[in-house]
Length: 174
Image (cartoon, rainbow, N blue to C red; front, side, top):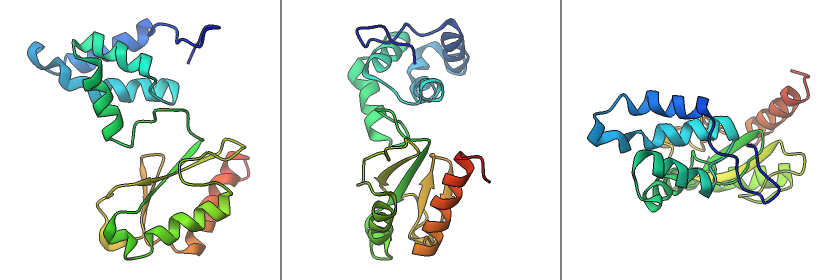
């Protein structure tokens, strides 16, 4: 993300606006607001997170109230509202997972990474978050890595292997 010395983001690029247009074209004119999630995902892909300024720009582009875009951003935990680490670890702590050690998995990761839920490690590698139901209750404890990779039956040993493997891959050792 390009910012000026006041901390404001540079305007959305022409390439980004072209990507928005391709998403909007999938819907009838009256339904162009349906592209809001795709536009948020595009911004996050390009910048790593979705700032309030970007939410306002998406709202203006789609003809929506800024609060409507903000409601989408804050409802889904796949949208980062602030920069996150290279690896975002979302641990399910919903009741079924809690009953099967979901909270224990979160605490184990907090101890291993030396951070608390919602924080990022000093090296910028890991952000630890809790999440609502990931839809794999029978496989708990479960977690999602970078909003894409579901990990099931996460014992302490499997959590340690995951973190160590991700760290090694970031250091070019894997």
